[in-house]
Length: 108
Length: 115
Image (cartoon, rainbow over all chains, first blue to last red):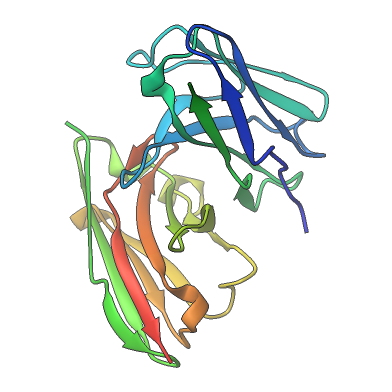
């Protein structure tokens, strides 16, 4: 079955740039979406359609996709950005969607 | 303001059934593709399934672990999404989220399946 693969954890110092990757064979043809989830809360969309940012999301969040890899970039990460990040996309048929396994971002 | 409010969660025994509901407001429910996503305790997000809008055929798709046991439906006259869960297993224990489109999430309802 189709899978999206993320690193389990990423650590970065405050003010530095964090990159979280998501790999999947269908990503050249399907959009990637990124969600942030903080403990005990529902997920929040931070990037949609590979690189678009909802208006309420800070500009330090950006997304890109090339080939079979999508990347979420936090430029100037802040302590408040800590949490779990999930990529989301569909298989090549578009009939089934899935999440990556999630990446725990630590900013310290 | 966009709101999604789930209900119907609770404790059920293995092999039992449960029906979740999600009432939506603040957006165009009729044209929205609606999904259910779950999260087992301490685990990641898992896509359960989706129903397309009526204009897109109102077709449903499901993740492999729930296919044949769960059914998603919608009542556009009441802006309500449903998840009928049958033959429940302990591994179905999770918080179940209702999702409108890709960006509107409810707060979730907990389903606990005991053995």
